[in-house]
Each structure stands twice: as structure tokens, then as C-alpha cells.
Length: 204
Length: 171
Image (cartoon, rainbow over all chains, first blue to last red; front, top):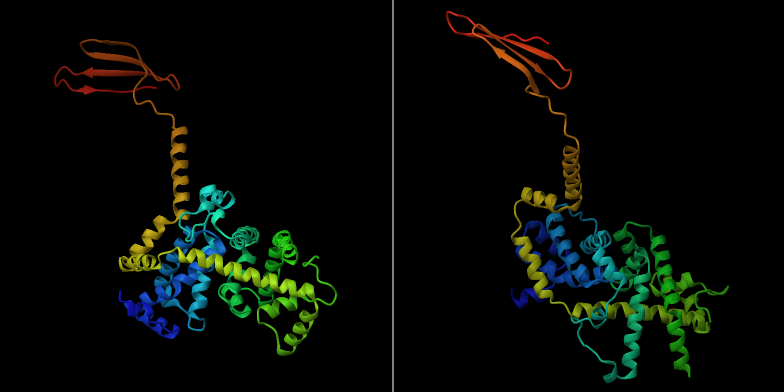
């Protein structure tokens, strides 16, 4: 696969046309253009890296199979988002996965695959605070209901409008707004103690 | 300071839609004027923006650790070695848990059923030969079956001229 193909950006129309025609380059372009984003959505919802990688693969396989039935009134990205969200929500969690979700082990905290491994001793205080906030935030995000987290991810990560989210999830626009409102309120509640403390320290 | 309870003049719904760029022009002005004066709403707005940033950086961190080239190659290879449609359907059917969990349960139920339920075997031969005697012309055998204690008399006559046997049965 050449670099020029990798960097080549395909418009949605061109992609859909190429996919329906069965063009090899169109399939390559689709995967290269969307895998990162779809992984992000899946990860945002499931909070599990391995699960998200599986989801992305399944989404593309589904798309390859169903591209013939793609309705042109919807955007390709909306369709991809919908499949990704459904796949993320439908994934049956095995007991092992549930266990992993609720019981983060020490090894997982140290997470080998994450770049920039850090030790508390050789980091400035601000960096440590950032890491601490990241951990608190991840915990709060997991505590959100799946519905609220899904809407939050589609809004904040993908920057979709209320109408686009409503189309992806097949819900009303008002429901999108209220779920987002709820998600943010819950996050504020969960992180209130931490943020209030930080605010107090900052004002001193 | 409780940032989750809006006061009478604070409209957190409006603030939310402002953050999402879902307000009309005149509403934007209203909320901006309000936020300029309301510390609570400003703090809510700041925190909501902080959450958006935190989500983006958490996801970006995960993304940076993934070899997307390898993922793309895997996905495209799976497409290329795709068998014909009927094979895919068959493979999917086999892979699907919702197919083989009921299938395995059904098989187990059937095995259990046949292990527990074994129909009583019908005796094909008499359980006991009580007495038997034979002579030159005929022989009589008295037998007993276990169910209804039938006594069967078997006459075995051998004719003098051709030596053929004739049998009869009584119950």
C-alpha cells in the first residue's frame, strides 16, 4: 500500500461510489479514513481498548457486507457511527470483561501499552495533578449510564450536532439535549469534590 | 458553592445548548451577558469544557498506542479472504452464540432424556423353561414369561415320513 494512497482523502460520495463498485482502493480508503475515529467512539463508550479494536474490525466487516444496502439519504459517517455505537452497546460482556471493568488491577493501572510511562518522582507537580484528574475523570465517565456516555462521546469527541446524534441513535433531538445535560451534571457531581479542592488550592 | 443547582436566573439547559452551539443568535447574546456576571455559570461552563478536553485527551492517548496500519491490514485481509455469501452465512450461523447455546442445551436435554428414560425392554425369549421333555413322536416345552405368567406349550411333532417339524403355541 503506497503512502500516496494512505494520505489521499476521499470524499463521502467518492467512497460510497467506489465501495458499491467494489473498488479495492475505496475499501482501503474507507478503513484508513475512519478506523481512528471509530476506535475513538468505541473506546469512549466501552472504555476498553481490546474490545474497541474488535468492534472496529467488526464494523468494517459489516460495512463491507452491507454496503449494497446503504441508503444514500443518510451520510456515510452517520451510518458508520450508528453501526459502531450499536456494536459497542450490543457487545456481550463476558464475566472476564465485567471483572476487568469493575476491578482494575495494579498491572492495568501501570498499563504497559500506554505511551509516556511516568513515575511520580520524576514528574512535576502539575503533571501529577493532570494524571490524577485523568484517573478521576475516567472513573466518573465509567459511572455514567451507557446512554448518557454515548451521547457525550458523540458530542464531545466527534462534534456531532444534536440532529446528527438523534439520527445516529434514532432518538429525538430533545432526548439528545437532556441526555447531554444529564451526563455533564453527573460528571460535575462525581468530580465536584476533586474540582472544588483544586479550585480552592488554586485560589490560595 | 453548589454548581449543580441553578438559581432562578441561571438556565443550565440554555448554558448546555450554548456550549453545544445549538442556540439562536439572540439566545447566544443573552447567555453571554449572563455568564459575564454569573460566577457559578461561568464555573459550570469551564468544567464542562474541561470534561470535553479530558475525554479527547484520554481517547487520543489510547489511539496513539495503536498500530492502525496493522489494524487496517488485518481488516482488509479479512475482506479479501471473504468466502462466498452462503459460506459467510453458514460460518456466521456457526459462530453465533445464539445459535449454538440453544443447540447445545437441546442436545444435552435429549441425552439426559434418553439416559433417564429407557423404555422397558420387551422380552424376546421366555425367562424360564420350567420343564421340557421329548419323545420319539413329539416334544412339549412349558415356558413362563415374566409379565403375565403365560404358560406356553410347544408341540413339536415330527412326522414319521418326511421328518418336518410343526409347531403350535398356546397362551
